[in-house]
Amino acid sequence: MEKTAQHVMNGLAGLIIIDDNDSESLDLPKRYGIDDIPLIIQDRAFNSDGSFNYNPSNMDIMRGWKGDTFMVNGVIKPHIDLEAKQVRFRILNGSNSRIYTFAFKSGKVFKQIATDNALLEAPIALTELKLSPAERAEIVVDFSNDSGKEEIFIDKSSGKDLFKANINKTASNTTTLPNKLITLDKLTPADAVNTRSFDLGGGMGGGMSGGPSRMLTINGKSMDMSVINETVPLNAIEIWEVRNNMGMNHNFHIHATHFQLLERNGSSSKVAENEKGFKDTVLIPPNESVKLIIKMTDYADASSPYMYHCHILEHEDAGMMGQFVVI
Image 1: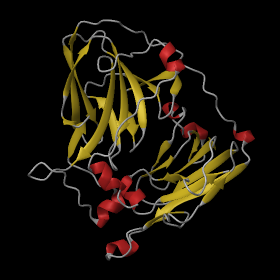
Image 2: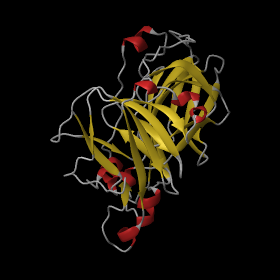
Image 3: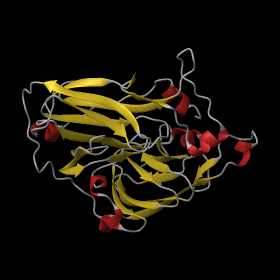
């Protein structure tokens, strides 16, 4: 409790790639390190001796701490030599709180093929991709006609370069991205048997005066390891409505499951096409709301409960987290 942000800052975080038969059967780039590249994007601050500088103020805790140096797979402004072909990037926002808008400086179009938990049903063409902390996405970029060129991957939100790709290798084992990927086994709102509400809130309160550090809440309560906040029936389909009642960004992450995003601010039309896959983390901007549909398919008792929380790590550490069991 209360140390997650510090642990991640010190390096206790990573990316695990899980593929299934659907992914393996499709004509997607699959050669690790050649045309299948993981990208763990993080921001840091450094002391003069090269050690990490992480000493968040109370305002940093409320707004989320941000570093002034960007790292990709632990390297500052790296470059990669790529073949002139389709390349798959598996992206993790591994930062404590920074929300990135990824793009190529040239405006190059790419196609998103997966969200946090699964492939999308079809590739979606984008020129930029927004990810909040812990969100993942897979994109495929076609460099087939870019031999001899360079492309710079950037964060449009900060205007900073992240890495440079040199397209200077002869293509081998080329792939052709299919127009259809998979069919998702989606849940149906009419089958939901229960609706739960989660209000994200709190304030600086005692934290500003050196008081208790747990100043953020879900449904008016800060995280308490001795309390089970929700009891969810096994295999029941439920609607979870999550509201951000504050003037700052939050996101919402649920352990041990995936969900579908049904609505933003009461409207299904406000859900972006690339948010319609299976996810476990969703961004909720200030004073906005989301509606999710969820089905828990594995047990959890009070000795090892699951959690839901804001994945802006300073917010999680400040109490914006709860526990639930599945019975």
